[in-house]
Image 1 (cartoon, rainbow, N blue to C red):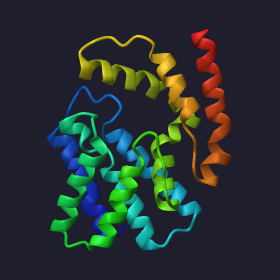
Image 2 (tube, one colour; image 1 turned 120 degrees about the vertical axis):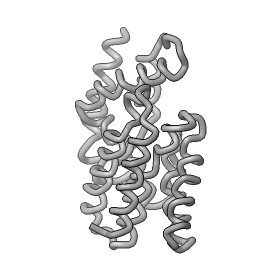
Image 3 (tube, rainbow, N blue to C red; image 1 turned 135 degrees about the vertical axis):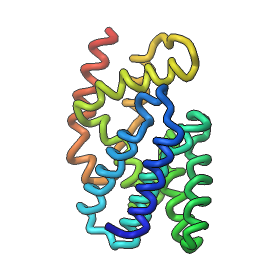
Length: 194
């Protein structure tokens, strides 16, 4: 494993331990590890260079770290700040840091990735929408939001349906692999609502 990626993974895992938040039922270390694994899968499909692989993987590790401390509001921008602080201390060049930052910021909904690296991270982050994992995440995100807000949320299925309808996969790999699964999930959710 790349030395920097190993340092980043250890640092982020330690953050999730040190700032453990039991209300993060979805945006937790398991989600982060899943995004890293999915990013790895997509990167390998596209045979990225070692440098580009490093950019996407580091972005995947850092993309949600600010959920730990500051909640979901502008967490992408705050996650970028946490990433920059760590990487500047690690003497990483500014160009690489900016590419990682751009990948993290591209995950903000609605996503508008501008290049393949950003598309890979966006698809890794929403990969579950095209799998059976969608149903567990749907419940976990709702419960997480309710715990954070301190109230029950009505119409969650409708909000999720809108999100699914608004979402798109960006890489051909994920379009081919996950679009049918996402369509199936969307149809099941629509039937549940009606």
